[in-house]
Image (cartoon, rainbow, N blue to C red; front, side, top):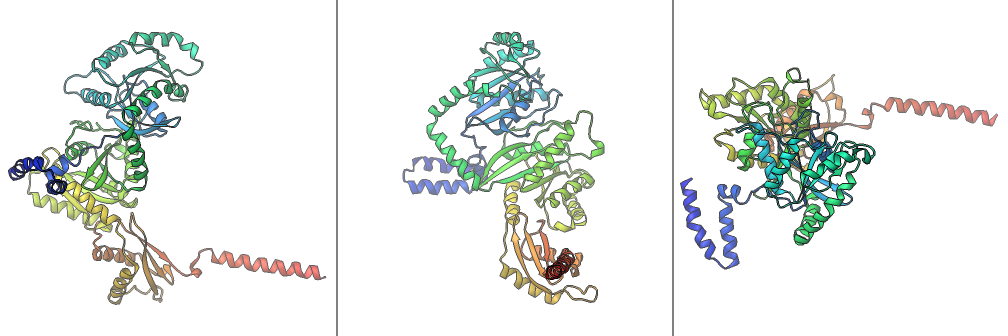
Length: 535
């Protein structure tokens, strides 16, 4: 570490004195080779150039409901339990052709020092200063409460550069019936409140009266940025970003690991399990690769979940959706435990069934009391026995608390992703298969030997291969597993869930008998009809 700092200190003055462009390029290339600088300087979380709208208010006023309404999605978990949302989250929104970014925040409430509410308040502070427009939501049915008045004053003291507008939510039906509640909103010092019903979509178009002036001002201040952002959106649709989901059981260090990777307290952490509820997406850049880190809620067995308020069920559903949409999935386990739990293997099986590339992160290695090498060999052996279909899956020992081993995570993500999208030519596949079939031909089934014609790869993500044979029913499952294991070993695809499909002759069509029967019956009916016509 001292050598790296000495290299940086000695080279920065010469870099600042260099005027030739090619020398500047050479210095930047040398800096990019240093892993410390590549993460700290070249890989900050990208600040979106889009217009940002922040939704702020006390608990249970409908911020997440309005967030889902503006984004036309169900990304945020909505429930009548106060404090359901905890971390701030971003999503693209759209109203009447205006495209912007919406920020959902946790509910404002009294925050004792060192509590979870204090972390939620700090997340809201960051969102307030990042936004270009702030909507302060209140419950229009209850009117202005002392808590609303307190946080309205707090919001003005934050001295945010963005304009603040009051929004009275939960006002369904004819607006005149809520006129008294709207008149109370003037005491907040934010002007006339906008009456809406986020759940039913009533009055959402009235938000344009506050949105359009701020949006026009943003475009005048950033005309070049806005134009570049439109071009970037077109490019992003065609580019392939790596979606990396961090999943696992509760309280194994998923959120702490994400904060350690990006070197920022982006998501809330705590000693108690179940702090994270929503799936939080964090864009990140590592070298030339754009990665979207996804922090998820902990997954417990169905019998151990709290079904009283359904929040945990919704969080687990969100975690499974993140697995389905991700490309690389890391399962965080607790290395200090005696063995991998049944839930760890169940989550891994879910990842394999979905065809996602798998990575095991053995966290809390600083708490291991026995030999370090022994614990790693134990985990790898258990994976070999329980997940035989993906032998050779990568296992990284880390400590999110101390930072041990976390530098290897992002390079390993790139390595696993490149294996997952790997494509093998048909000629190379068949040369390998001809060589292996001479030593290990498929066994005879029912006295018949299957005739394998050729093999080809039809798709990637995950790698999918098709084996053309004369009769697919003659290929036993044991030979299919042998074929895939040998293929992974030969072409460097260890730990990747590959798929194998069998294709046969037309006679193998399961509906061929029905088709022949229909031909016979139709020909008989046609001949009888022809005889009656002749008569």
